[in-house]
Length: 224
Image 1 (tube, rainbow, N blue to C red):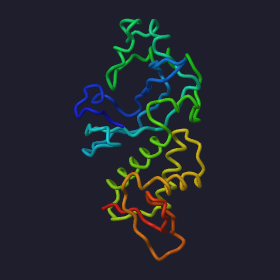
Image 2 (cartoon, rainbow, N blue to C red):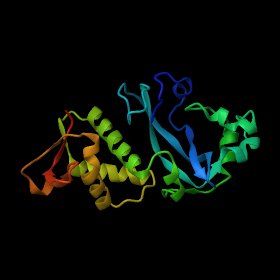
Image 3 (cartoon, helix red, strand yellow):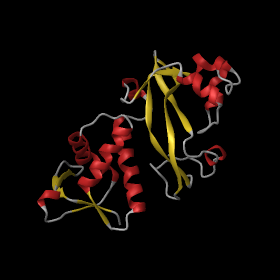
Image 4 (cartoon, one colour):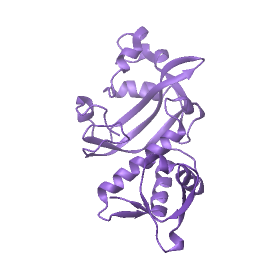
C-alpha cells in the first residue's frame, strides 16, 4: 500500500502499528454512499521507487498486517455528526477526498463501535469499485513485486509462490482453498504478462493457460 501521489504529507507520518480505516463508495439502497468498510494495522514501512499495483507511486510503501472487515458498512454521512474530523455533516464527502487523512483515536473508536468485525470477505464488498478478480490479480502482482525486489535468483518456483499467495489471501480474509488459488492463477495470470519457465521435474509442474485457453506445463516465474 502507498499513495497515488509521489509526495503525501500524511503518508509520510504513518509508522508501524498505526491503524488505518478503509473506506470506499458503495452502491447501497440504489445510491452511491461513501462508507467505512474495514480497518488494518501497519506492519512495517519501506522504501520502493517502483509503482505498486499500477497505482501507488509514492516511494514510501506500507506492509499491512491484514484486514478486518466490517460485517456491515458504516455510511460516513450517517455518522458524520459524531466525528470531529468531518467539519460539515451535510458535506461529509469533502473531508474524505484525500487518500489519507489523520483522525483522532476517539473518531477511530466511534467508527469501530458502529459495527462488528469479521475476517471473512463480506458479500457487500463485491460492490466496491474493484471486483474480487481485480483484488486477486492485484494481490498476485503485489506479491510478485515484493519477491522480485527481495530475491537474488532470476526465477521463483510457481508452487512456492502459490503457497505464499494463499497465505496472503487468508490474512486478508479471502476464503479460497489452495486448489482454488492455483486454478485462478492458472487461468488468469496471463493478464499480468508474467514470463514463466518450464523444467524437467514433473513434481514442479503447474498447468497454465494462455489468453486463448491453450495450456502448458510450467514450473517457475521469471524474475528478470
